[in-house]
Length: 130
Image 1 (cartoon, rainbow, N blue to C red):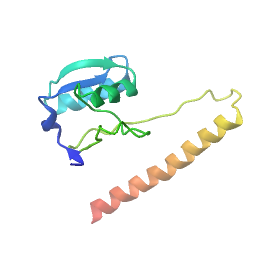
Image 2 (image 1 turned 60 degrees about the vertical axis):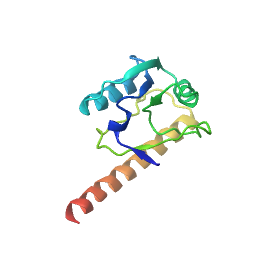
Image 3 (image 1 turned 90 degrees about the vertical axis):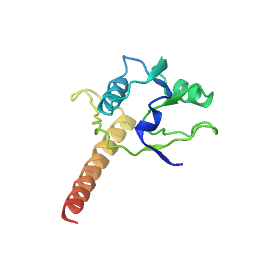
């Protein structure tokens, strides 16, 4: 199984981010949209604690797609529901010195972000036309 409908987790115990995390607000909005009131058994600010708790079979979690490999006994499933888009942003102090590595990273993100935005817009146009 590679995907899950949120209705399938309705009766599961949920491991999630604590209230001070913006991800928690996002996840709560998704659950509210689908009228799901989970039994939250653990709240934390750390992804690795969430993933470790799922690996220990304490419950399930909704997290951004992990960048690093997860535990062998944890399966990452794609959510099939139409969930709200999540905006990401990057900020910096305009007139402050920026070390070369930071400047290169900022340029990489902003340049590739523009390319990604153009791709998404063209894909949306093709989907509308097609």
